[in-house]
Amino acid sequence: MKCSDRISLLPRLMLLNAMKITKRHKILEVGCGEGNTSVLFAMITKCNVVGIDIDKRVIEKAKQMKRKLGIKNVIFRHFSGERMPFKDNTFDAVILPFVLHHVAKRQTEPLIEECVRVCKKDGKIGVIEWGVMKDKRKHHKQVMLPKMLKALFREYNITPLKYERVDPAYYTVGRVKK
Ligand SMILES: C[S@@+](CC[C@H](N)C(=O)[O-])C[C@H]1O[C@@H](n2cnc3c(N)ncnc32)[C@H](O)[C@@H]1O
Image 1: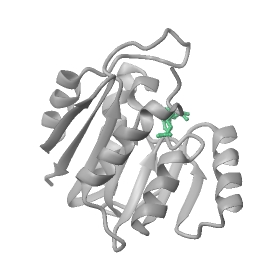
Image 2: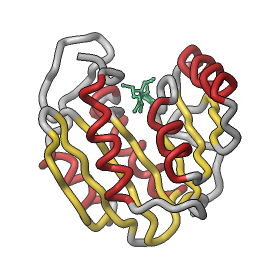
Image 3: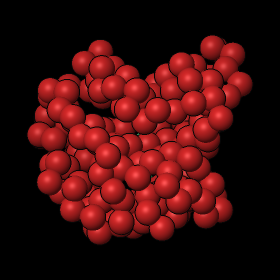
Image 4: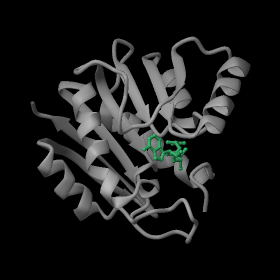
């Protein structure tokens, strides 16, 4: 199963709804891939979205889609989530849809720490994960179970606000306490 399949649309829409994003918000998507979720959030809410990804090729594809659709309120950049060139407290929300299973275990904590750094105090962090090993691809580095994410949220002082299963995925939203 690929994250671009239709089955992943529902958790994306549910995350969007649960995060209560409005036009005034500035959102960061870490691991935006070809830009599907960034574009969805930008088009539905009219908020400003920055999508970043460690893979240059997918960022080129995301930029192509942006051009095709003529959307102005989303930008795509080639950056790694572990070291982002944004100032502290820049974003109202940071989302990681279907990203953490692509991240090696030892890189997960630095990535979450960096997401918290660039997110404003009382801003939100939103995650979507499969929670089960869907298939054994080389780029799938770990299974991010809900209890593991819960522990990460606790470690980085992110207060859980919402958790919901959307089989075969789940999403969760937390508030950043600084
Ligand atoms: C399955 S895709 C997610 C696509 C996108 N979030 C969506 O909802 O359509 C996972 C993406 O995470 C990216 N990624 C993995 N580790 C990353 C990191 N450390 N920093 C930034 N992007 C990363 C991969 O390059 C890949 O494009």
